[in-house]
Length: 113
Length: 109
Image 1 (cartoon, rainbow over the protein chains, first blue to last red):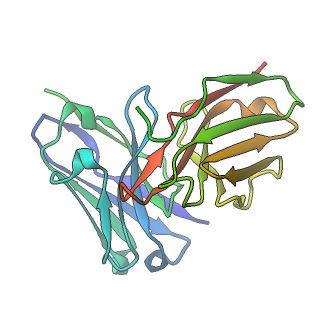
Image 2 (cartoon, rainbow over the protein chains, first blue to last red):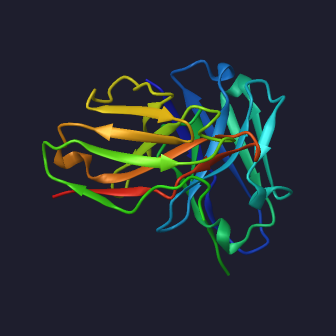
Image 3 (cartoon, helix red, strand yellow):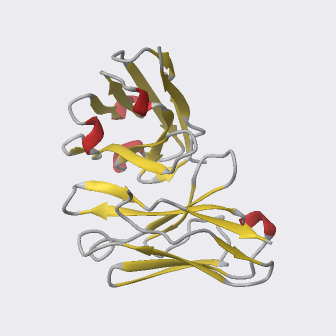
């Protein structure tokens, strides 16, 4: 069974940093693009970033470019999202996805003073 | 303002067939397969269609199609548990980004 488990969320002040982690199991992690998708409270889904199987291609939504960094460790079946310069508008539930298949419950990030 | 446009909320009665639409442009729907998500209240989104195919476990009542710069998700034999928010998404070649529709709330009366 495919599983994705996110961790690392929490409450952080504006301008602060957090690193999200996502561990995958039940599939060959190194064969898939991995994505991060988020959902602000009461809002729709928004794609955040993705990374190719071998890390050779990376893309970001414009609003996080220069602040967020996606990375992966195929040996650990893990994908990460380093979030710096956090803003109130980054407050959301963050989901990692195998391709665009969201399998985790998401992790909450709250940016507030 | 979402790159993909999904019409206002829809409603239907059990047993009916409902179609949800998603409109884009040549750089997104016109060039790439569309993914559809179902999000039940208070839960994570669930992929129900990717590139016109259903993952295992998704009922065959769900089907999708794409024509030009528009796509649609059809649900036949509507059931009360189909009441959810539905999102379309696809890759945009101009933006080099995944883009989503704003979502469509389906109410089963």
